[in-house]
Image (cartoon, rainbow, N blue to C red):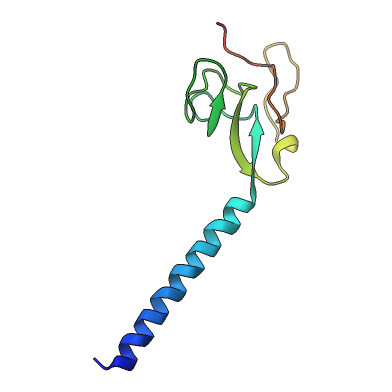
Length: 102
């Protein structure tokens, strides 16, 4: 294999690596934290007192746990009403609803 062929292979590999990094970065940029939308045990992080991080929420739609959602969708997501018939919405900050009993 010639030096020119090896150079082309290396250049192609570097280009592919840089493209994949750019794709991952843009995908992360298109996400935002949304509190109160995760199902029990499916939060991405933060689940209040006595929990550690991802997957530690105790109840569905726990207000003090969050999940990454597509940017711009957090507060418009359709969620089921709570037991009292009150509509739920996601929020950009912690909520004091649907917290597990102590």
